Image (cartoon, rainbow, N blue to C red; front, top):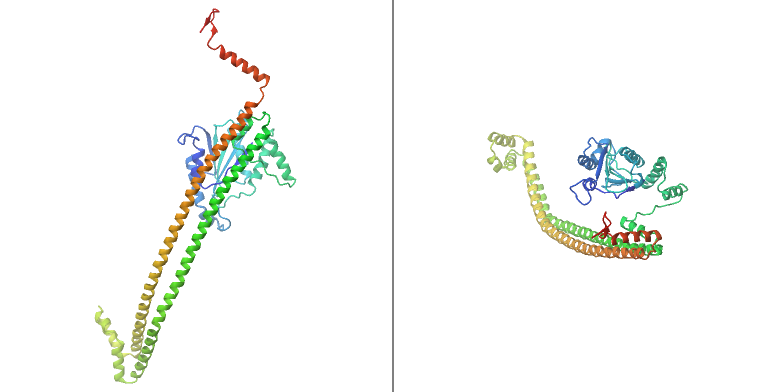
Length: 452
């Protein structure tokens, strides 16, 4: 049993497209032996992955509904893809029920038996295997499935599974798990690509295989290091470009805010003498109002001054206008209130004029700020485009370099196979094949005569 956790991702659509179709023909699904679901109300695999995607997108609402705080480390990688593979010798007696039993056991080892799962079994390889497409987001409370020590848990489960079946296929895993139980840090060997494994296996008995294999692995590691360094440089350049853009934007906005504050201060300073004059005029007007209120004729003048005659003339409700005039002549309180409203109207008019000038100055500065921000954005996009173009060219060069590396590797292992000494059994088989080829077109017939 070999459990393999693939890289986590975000796209249920992409994962399902790979699992539910053939590798080379996306429209066909000949390699799909059977499918099954868990914790889903549907059995159709095409509907299943859509429900899983909808559940992942609804994570925030599920948390809120369950009373779970939306805190902690955030991740969008809701797609967990795992493969369980058996030895080719186990294919004959392996049933669908046994594969599902193992798959459910692996889910329990990952503490994912409450998650939505789509099981897909393929028949395109000698070794039986089943894929598990798991939604890491819980449909109950929106919590994300933890990935802590998941490989260790699967390793222990796989060893127990093989012991339960009565045959240990992977001795190295048993040794590694025993070392971990003793408290020793142990990491399993990394997976080798299949084409490299096949090259090494084909020449495993050739003399000098250890030297050639070690040299080829060293060259592969050097090439892989160059590839990683290239990706690291590209990522670092992108981060530096992004940081520079953010810094430039912050600087432009900060400078604009300071200039705007200075402009507003200048406008207000320019209006300050007018405000002072208005306060003085209104103070004198109130003093005159109070003196006039002491005499009958003065009260009449106050009533006339307090009324906004133009507004009264424009008013549509004549009765209300007449009532205002009557109150102004009859009530000292009404005269005072109308006078204060008139003074407040004067202050409001001056305030509107000042705000208009402030907005006019701000609009000029904001247009200049937006122009600088647009220029910074264009510069950032141009820099990112240059980096991306360089990365694309570098990736193409790396692909050619890897193709050359693969050719060199094939030649190295091919030379080993050619130099390998031929065993007596192989010599006998080769002699028989040569004899058959020589007599294929020159055999005697039933009567003993030769026929061409």
